[in-house]
Length: 421
Image (cartoon, rainbow, N blue to C red; front, side):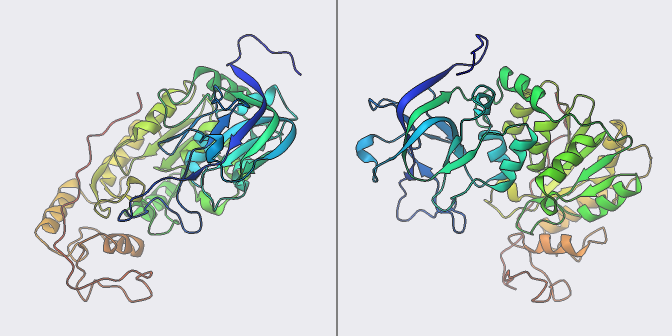
């Protein structure tokens, strides 16, 4: 066993402890299961670690996706736990969400420095998730973690289980403890900045169901003219993403999970900003507040939200005041040109007012909408395309549009511009 420094976070080595795999939480018969993803099932509850005497291990509970899960009692475990010989590290919960996995499943990995040969055992948050996502393993290798990584889907008793304090979690206050920030600094890959490399991290190639901006392709073209390289993370391996993120002098992110990946390898000499498409998420703000050597500016040029009413914020579709956005990018040093794109704000406000009175959002648009933006607007609840506006059945991407759709709802107005503290 390695020599233990006295300034480390606390941890315990539990003998014959059991990692409890969870069970689906209770649900009323009339309640829709909106948290389920195809093929994965509902989130599991009752996950955690129990000592051999049946008590809960000191650091054996988890928070994942807003949910606090405590291990069920031995008497409630439906299958006899298998026995695992040797020493293992309890890694916590793994789920299907990219950003949540990176920020909620890494808080115990500091233990790998002390036990470099011990397998890290994670617990699946859903029955249909049976393997550690490959991208997560790639990210861990980039951070210098070489321990074997496994996903536990059935309860297992471990001969010696290392259970340590969780040092980061997106849904905890604070989200990042000082030790994790210091640990991360020593594990970020040493990679020189590439002189003049500027990246725009886009969401324009995601499916229409994912949140994004109207006219993002126009923004891409503008930033390319200013010397930016446009990348679409979903088309790249994690290794390629981390290499690009770690080498760029300036980065502009469309609001999304890619910024979490960058935060794991961010450098103090990098200049980064995120263009908001929804109100600044408090969890994201707290995450970056816990990383004092990482600077992220928040650019808020939103004017309206075309989300389906009642939908989650990650599906928001934002209308931006592109002229105001260009001014902010110039003020913060991301671009040098005085040029701008998009119509004046007053014309956009007039368009929104017409929509409130039931006018077609496509026919009255004050800008030449690209086809992707047209499709995003037509997915909005209450949109009433005319015959000239209606897409063909192939363009509709499987969504049905009714000529008797209800009256349009006024989009939500964006908050005043704000920047990182």
